[in-house]
Image (cartoon, rainbow, N blue to C red; front, side, top):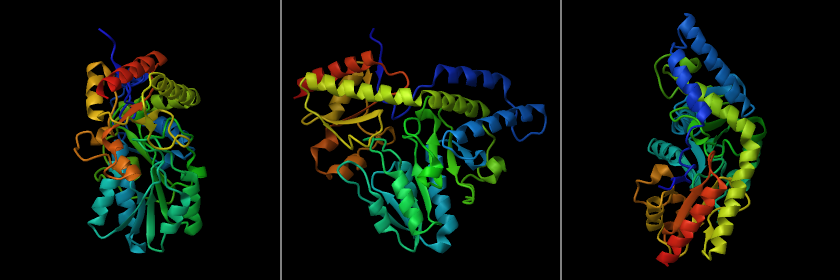
Length: 382
């Protein structure tokens, strides 16, 4: 039986074996509540403090600026909803884009129903907005700008540093948030250089466990908690800390930091290999999004005349996992809002696009096999 090939890392990643081993050991030996003052609690607190230092250093932040959460969705919700609620006395205008993850768009819709004015900036044909667009949209009522670092469907990378500079040049007290869930692990992230105040991350995209992430919150923002209860995370996020998951997150980040440059090169080579193989097999395709400003591990392929759902089903039957959109919208019958933003709602690319994404265990052999199978199925469908 042929080994299954997983090429949907943008949805989630398997854990590094070292992460599994570290977490398993922690589950046996580190069960104390980090809020307890006895030796079992102090042991957990030590691991918690060490992990916070490692996580903070990965984005050039301070340890006390890291709020541990359940993942990207909670981090995005806290960043957006709690910023809006805290600063609404100064204005009720918020800026975002029309290609954000649902974890950003749904909170925006929630706030719209509560009287906030949301500006959804349109992206260009490459899936990007410009700093000039953001600057033009800013008003004296603007309190928050939330723009993703890298798009989860088409991989386009936004000019976050330039946007941050334009925001702070207009008014320094406007809060700037970026959803970096998809970019963390492949892009260099320095929160100081980027001028971001809030930044969301999830562990499961980089070979860590699901159910754990963090929100970077710049000193001075002091957001109230989204989850209320105990006084964990310096009163910013209630709930007994999941120490094994936090330790696993730390291990994944340590691996990420060590391997980032080599992995980025690996993903670029795999992307190039895939496209070369398809071209050699005379498969007609177009890349959705930006070919220059792009996440190295994502390639969104528009295959003219090929029904993406049929293709993905047949690939799955052949043991190859790809996606026809983000995992968070796969059960939704509505078309991809990202592709609609790029092309308009009636463009054939919306139903003729697959997403291939690479990760920690991807190999050249897997990509070659996948490319051959894609070509075989495409030619049978056209």
